[in-house]
Length: 196
Image (cartoon, rainbow, N blue to C red; front, side, top):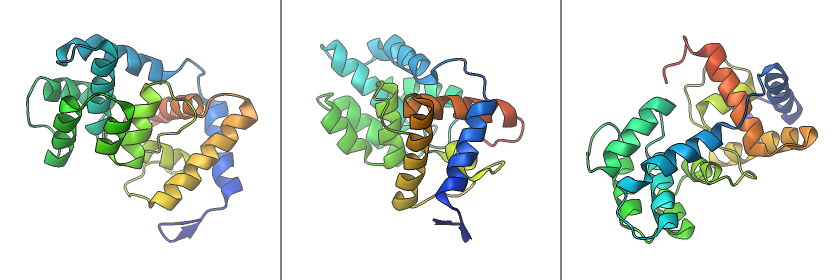
């Protein structure tokens, strides 16, 4: 695949992911902590059904996640749920508002989110482990970069996701867990050099 004018072989990409995984501390699934946080703040959402409240909360977290650290993401999601309209792009806040007014179903929330990364993030927080959230850090891991400051096409997104899934299958673990472990390792290793 061609990314930023360079050809990457799938074997090379998978080897980069594998190397990162093998160097990582296998300390757990970051998405479980994200789900706990969503449940913790879900009482701020107006909805009689617990499942809908949690889905809407996770949807709001996913919607405002682009270009934010996890700490920024948590604060911003809670603020938007509570009615504050600042801190990120207006179109992302609009997505949150639509999610909060939705019926709380996966189908409707995914339709509102309408983006590969944020839909995958929503699904991963909901513990749907067969999808991979491809963000700038997972791209950097896959391409063996110190930082990623560019976007990718939907086709490249799918190919990178497949690479993570293939490596996860080699280690007999869930793809979202592999992504979580490598993402956390990358963040910890590069925390002083990352813009977010």
